[in-house]
Length: 313
Ligand code: NAD
Image (cartoon, rainbow, N blue to C red; front, side, top):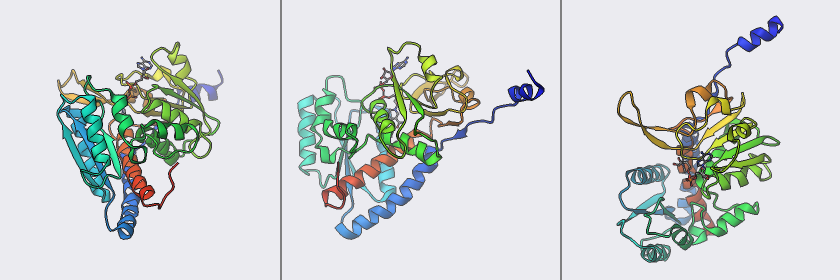
């Protein structure tokens, strides 16, 4: 090894830049606030979101609370319709139909907070949300539009990850993006976005999942690595290509053995991966706030489509 190469090998890698989702979400909220006021000037009412919250799962209640608080910050009205966790599928479907028929007031956007209790057929419930009020983007019509490259309501987390990459100036065109996780709400829509034509797209995308063989070999080839699994610190430093952009979607509640207290961790071993990656998103403060910001954007879009100000699809 030459002296220069030796020095380069020993030089500490600069720590990855932080993909600060919280700061970006604040900037998005500021511009949405102005757009909401324009809507109010024209329509003499505020966009309105109705959230269905089933049962009393603490995490779901806390997500719904942050969505309501964020809606209030940008001037979007919201209402939470609470349902007992003994509810059955037909009752929830009927409730959603009544919300869509505006028995609970104007409903530009309707969102069903997941997960639902085991006895409920989640698919049937999500299908009952009319596609033009489906601000989570989970209805098959919206999933189909996204897959055809003419998105209307894009699932919020996937949209947030793409926005985060664009905002940080992470090049996606021609790059290899590896997404770990194939769920309908995160992994699949994100794969479609990153592979689509245009800004934040044109990547070569690989989707990995629980049955993927040689996960680490695949992730090591990623210029952009997204973890959306739900397994604490599954992605370790040896699975990351130096300089890669690493986006951590996972939210896992673990008990810290040192303090005995609960805390949130992502799917990525943050401290170790930060020493290798070029960019990394933290948990909390990364993808989470952007998911909420994208929900607000979708709700405004739903209200605008409804009054004919914007075209959907
Ligand atoms: P999911 O359970 O529906 O999907 C998990 C995926 O991970 C599956 O496709 C599965 O095949 C894959 N998987 C499981 N074990 C694996 C392994 N060992 N190796 C490779 N792949 C494996 O979960 P989801 O709804 O997509 O959520 C994933 C995570 O993201 C969860 O922690 C969830 O809490 C979090 N999440 C965060 C946000 C946010 O706003 N930050 C939003 C949605 C979900």
